[in-house]
Length: 200
Image (cartoon, rainbow, N blue to C red; front, side, top):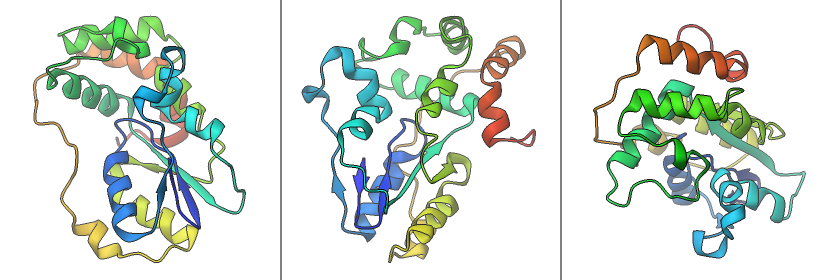
């Protein structure tokens, strides 16, 4: 989590949070109070990964505007799978979805939905629904600008709009079948209704 004098930004993996973190730190004096993996017990790893560990242990100032970002389920799974495919070390075995992993994107998503029939992202995003503002990765730059504006931060909006993308995957294989797409979207119905319409 990044904390400034006016806002708190909660990190959710694969939602553009690396870009947001770098833009905040480049523009505003911010304190990173994120725990490092080595400081986190195995049983707390998912909480750490989701940002919950920090949210529960960091001092909460109600005067600060809190915000985070979400990503459409198809895009999130695609981003996660491609990121892991591009790593020599593979998926961290402590992560909840580690035992769902497959070299087949279709099979990985299917395994994940079988393990979380009510939606893995529904669960993860749900942890953060007490924040003041939720942006969408698909509108990353403008939603970050909106969040920082709502917080009253002094920052360079043009820098955010023109800065190159950060932490994007170059591994482009992977295709989701219609059957698994429907299965995933049904399990993540809350996410779709809460944050997205049929245009995405």
